[in-house]
Amino acid sequence: MTITGSPEAESAATAPGEPATDRITRIRLSLVHLPLHTPISDAKVLTGRQKPLTEVAFLFAEVGTESGREGLGFSYSKRAGGAGLYAHATEIAPELIGEDPHDIGRLWQKLVWAGASVGRSGLATQAIAALDIALWDLKARRAALPLAKLLGAHRDSVACYNTSGGFLSTPVEGILENATASLSRGIGGIKVKVGHPDSATDIRRVEAVREHLGEAVPLMVDANQQWNRATAQRIGSVLERFDLTWIEEPVDAYDTEGHAALAGKLDTPVATGEMLTSIGEHRDLLRAGACDFVQPDAPRVGGITPFLRIAALADEHHLDMAPHFAMEIHLHLAAAYPRTTWVEHFEWLEPLFNERLECREGRMVVPDRPGLGLSLSDQSHAWTTEQTTVGHRTT
Image (tube, rainbow, N blue to C red; front, side):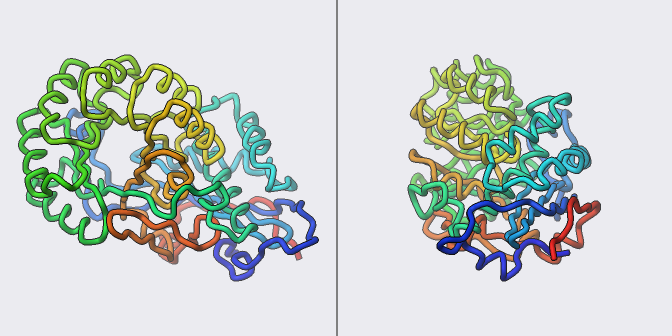
């Protein structure tokens, strides 16, 4: 059974006078392991807390309805957790069968409470994210609108920066080559990883990249939570001279006070939030004034439904936003945010889909295809290790 990407689904917008209700009849869940060409390392590897990253696990949800409409969503996990996402999703997905897919907020709550004994954040809600995102994709497809337009876009393109070329496992010469290639593809900024045990190595690498890029190209650094407060203050002060767009996760993701103290002392903006997995955690972060750029991750917080609540909180706090990873989803969400936004370019996910996102003049362009504008590739099916279907196809 192939649900996503059928011609019928692409053209099935609601006709005048057509009933607005619909019912979910089937859900296909797939666990896909995407291998990386080269193992990559950031500061968490150099401190011995994690092993090099060799693959990313994805949970895909394809939701179909009795009217023939279809939606695609996904969540992901790095290093560990993919099998857990898939297992939890298979347990709770039957709760959606027979439901009206328009009732996304209510259905999100239903799924949360179906698995509440294992929590309302973390892995439990990351499994829900794939289903929630599929429902939003379905809703936008029904309206024959890109998801950004359905949400209320503020722009048709979003400033973008590349991360995948700047890991600590890449020699500085390779980072410079990758940066040149990224800029030639129309990407606007470059992020490099820091947090090397030898801080002088960090400084030399950042200095080399800044000299290579010149002063006009936005440059970000990411410490992946591996500095303590004193180190973050000391190195952050040294890095001020490179005119960085932000310093990302300088201290532990849950050290809200540490992030707030640093944000209050440095001229360089502080960015964080990607590791948080609930609305409440983001609310505490924002109330503490712990960042200048907030970086929510829709798959990690439980999908688009909670992401929109986090975005509303961020707007109330007058914060800029740079959602983490998953550009295929976050491009639409960033386009619908009223303040300054960035989207993170990772080409890693491209083999999973038949479509490609376009970057021009430093910005990623919102596609004009309905919904997320994605369909699964043959390669994604080849990398599928587990799959189950809930419900049935109507005749």
